[in-house]
Image (cartoon, rainbow, N blue to C red; front, side, top):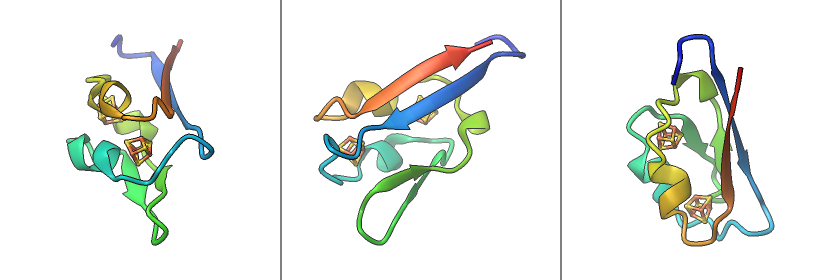
Amino acid sequence: MKAKEKIRISIDENLCKRCGICSEFCSEKVFLELDNGMPQVTVPENCIVCHLCDWRCPDLAITLEVIS
Ligand code: SF4
Ligand code: SF4
């Protein structure tokens, strides 16, 4: 990722089954897991675009977009 690029991370609440895999694999602590298990994107600027969250999400609920 280039220095000036930003990342947009979206989670489809209808697809997410609240398994916690995304927050568990994210080394940069981008997600906060709410009490109901739903992940919330809190610090997208910390994302290093490793794709461990979206590629491992069993329900394809996460979309990562690089925006310049
Ligand atoms: S890995 Fe996917 S299904 Fe599991 S909590 Fe994260 S967004 Fe939801
Ligand atoms: S791409 Fe990597 S750093 Fe970015 S939110 Fe997903 S797991 Fe975290």
